[in-house]
Length: 79
Image (cartoon, rainbow, N blue to C red; front, side, top):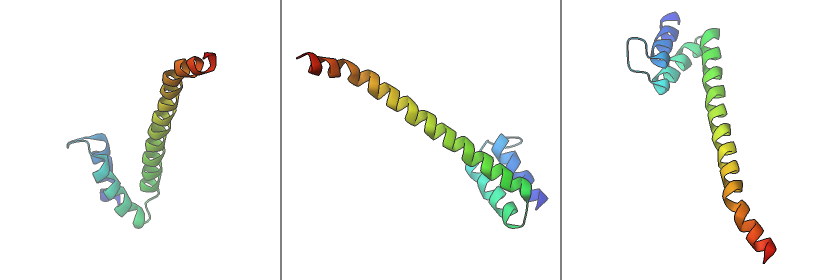
């Protein structure tokens, strides 16, 4: 269990190998299935960070959309 978690950390942070979060998730899942609490924490942390990235991208797109449509809205209102 401990060695699988360690492999997950090495892959996640790129220590001694190429950084690969997908491979890290595979190792963390194997370790978590065997009862590793620290692997469960790492999996939750990865999911949280990925969700934050998606939310910030969606927020950015909404802002850009409003900025791009704002002049057209006023042209429509004023005509």
